[in-house]
Length: 455
Ligand code: GDP
Ligand code: MG
View (cartoon, rainbow, N blue to C red):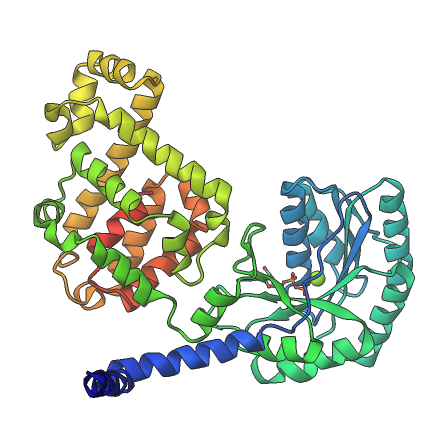
């Protein structure tokens, strides 16, 4: 017995070390090492409620400071902090206007000057003013130069000395590459950088330079910028970041999940989709599939570059609750309504049906109408998708459909989706990056995807 079991474990080891498993093991080891690299071993700075927290931004010109200042202010404002912005960039023409515009749009109080040329004076005055007004988050934007110039560092140091920030954020463009380490170190040598924000991660750059920035500044990455808009901003999460860096995402986990659903067995649905047909019952089943997949966040978390905003508890519960409500409404529909290829028409022809379903499911008639509107949008989408040749052929989707068709499809999907849902998904960029991931990694799983997009 003893010998037998020993032999067994030896065989297991051999198996593990071979082929795919070997690759997985190496990947895992690399992954773990990289995770260690983005962890500077210090806790990220967090603001204290009820206190005046002064945050100063530093970084080269064009790295995204002004944009990111506004994003961070917006982030805290939405969380209920009393937040404001100060423009201490007197170097770049239009700097104040840029900040003013962002702040006004987001209704964030701001301070700056068109005439004062000394950034130290502006920063001090602004901080003083907002401190007196009991602002909790005071964010100071500073100027940058194209290169690391002595004058920039001198100015930065003077501003820092004058306002005594609680946190200095170093803003880094993800595409910076090789120069990254020296640059980050130069900033850290002059002022006490305590946090890093990596911007422009929505582009081609994977942000590998961030690893050097963390090492050089001994500071954690606190947020990432994923677009030009004020809410293209996510708290930094190690695992998805590294996944993206390695270009793998957790596509494997995602495929496993989708496969668990055995959606491939659903030949009837696929057949219908091919012909551009989609009934209320199909929608119901798609919702069921999503529910079966378990926590939404888990699924979405597997898709790199995805809006983490979506994964926060509130949103997830909200989405799930909405889904459940829609399903409850459909539970009150009869077979004729559920199986019609134009479910909405059945209702519009005989509006009494809407009242019946509303009563049966304990919702208002408007809720039923909204569901039908949503359904109509999905059905339209399916129709369009059915019209794109080869989309549901299976196999490698990217080979079946050409890029311009896909781009068009993405746009159509965005148009047809509930804007709130699209927003949750990280906007158009989120949707596109998801589409891209599927095209690259999980091609052929289009069937499984239907569920996500419908949300
Ligand atoms: P600053 O000179 O450091 O203040 O940089 P800005 O905030 O003015 O940003 C420079 C450019 O980068 C602007 O065109 C921004 O819209 C853009 N930008 C900033 N952050 C991001 C981001 O996360 N993604 C993308 N795509 N663009 C960004
Ligand atoms: Mg700026």
